[in-house]
Amino acid sequence: MWLIWTAAALAYSPENPDTQAFLSFAAEFKAEKPLPARADGYASTGELWGQVASLVKEYPELIRPEHLGSSVENRPLWALHLGAPGQSERRVMVVAQLHALEWVGAQAALELINDFVAAPHPGVALVVVPVANPDGRARVETDLRTGAPKDTYRRANTNLVDLNRDWPVNREPDTWLWPRLPVTRDFYSVSPGPLSQPETQAIDALARRFQPTDVVDLHAYGGYILVPWAGRYEHTPDHQRLMAKATEMSEAMPGRPYRAMQLCHWTRTFRALGAQIDHMYATYGADSFLIEIGNIGVRHLHQDTFRWYNPKDPRKDLDKVSGALWALIRWETR
Ligand SMILES: [Zn+2]
Image (cartoon, rainbow, N blue to C red; front, top):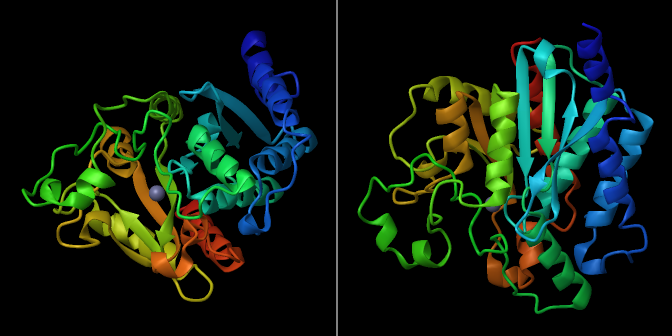
């Protein structure tokens, strides 16, 4: 009994070894210069972790870092736990930035951590992975700092695997057309095998331990709240409930709401094979959502791929995502 109590007390305390490791990791960024104006509105990686570290220091009893594993280039993957999963009926998992250029998701994840620390919701445990592809993010940050050409496109991890095509469910297309389109070959092909990358393996292991009731995957762009299936045209057996939740999330957004729909109904032929939302729904029974933050822009009008994915003034979109995430957190605990 004493041992269990000690472990529980240690979990949310400055003595937790992962807390110490996280604070040392966040402190390593101290000397870096601010990002150039091209990235206005977005925290640099050092600033992002610095802000989380301040919260961890200030509220060690509320927020607990967990070291999930390492990326291909050995960067640590971090989760932040808020609330007690063992005592919570609802366990909400939020993953951001599986895709290198989609910084707005990490920014939304950071805000969620801030908001939940300020106002935890009883009966709900939250775990947030703000940067799921740290190598890809680092590459984009180097591009920004060194002034790489503005049309430089980054999506995958170091092994050039798209981390949102690396999950075990719905890897085979249900249409002959999709795999034959050039866009599939160039941008959206399925990974070499299920969970072939250390980043997806670490996030899957987290889901196995945490047993989420709800999962949200934060991406950019488009202005959609998407439900499974991503890889099949047919509806899931829980389509009505998933759409009811997605619609409530959409209706909680200030201003013009994002559109709720099934992911692969984006166009008649589009399929996202091996996507995380299909895996989290099918394997863990979690109600799963993918939020495409920001509205669709025409690429050539932006020229800068960073701006193509990340709105210049992200405030409006961050408020929309926050509205949606809180609607989900409060769902059935109101
Ligand atoms: Zn994405």
